[in-house]
Image (tube, rainbow, N blue to C red):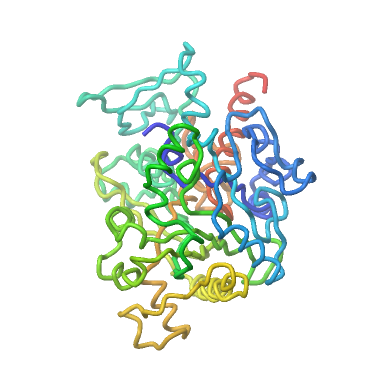
Length: 484
């Protein structure tokens, strides 16, 4: 679809932590520190939400293409979580600000209650300009290089025919953290041994292509709550809800469904202002549709789903999902074959590093602590899931061994893939692009997407990727002598 993941994601607008970008710079990527990139967040933003305090206005701007709003509807969850923050000693924060630790009400990329995707924000306003051509359903198969290893264009399939488009200046590759390394490898740029095994001539031996894969591992914990305090299936599909949305663009369908706020915390030590765990809090759970649509969407095994959610089929629920923000484990993306129409093979490799599991168990225990607060019990009558997960129950309830087993059976991707074309200085053998996002070993080729992140940002990845694109557009203009 047009707009990529922004056409189907949760629309959560969070920028990450100041320490993320300062750390990118400290790794040798000059110009990517927080003070240098902050204005690119502002450049793209058109903030129409409610500020938590007047001081937060300095962290937002208006007039950019990306519409950012506050949630238009709330259940009992958001005010309850404000009380939870006070009970547990967390501040209420603007999740897009420089100080991130605390409870953050949600901002979303919506425009007057309608999803505002990348294509709606950036492409639709200029779609009729003569210097832009968008070819839908064109499947790029590889980047073309001349004898001097300069990218001169791309080959693509359109309506079953091989076609070529040439570039006079350079090629920009923005296929995402799974398909960008796939295209680089299909084009002969990547780990030489793997390319040889796939029968692909090596144009440039770049070992790091497809390595360094990161994602934010995510699990879901569920509570039964008092009727009328969260979101039921009837709330979502009732004629009143549908009419309210169609006529007024208001109601539950005008928001990211269910998700209401995030708690950012540091529970693993180190720099206390640098979050390592995000707990997202939602007014519904996977039980809401009895597995009809959600289970196939996340590829959950039916027996695991029933074990977890059958007891909630007739209830309203609260979900708190711990999300590991700074994983130490690394996965990889490799080619399945030299056929460009075959999907790449992604090994996300969750919890390969033992510290990741230790931190995730701490996140589970913090989530349970939140669910057991007086505010949640008083306002929502919350009761934690009672049925143990069958493959893990032999470990005993609430032991570290049980939670490790539970996490391994139920972990899900939150689709924040990053890092597979790592931005790094020349001394890093796993680097793929320079600080100006030029691909190693070749000329005239740049990568602009989440794959360049040397470490995944401690947030949803949409806003950081917009920032990367804004900075890249300036660098491209600078390199070709255009004003910025």
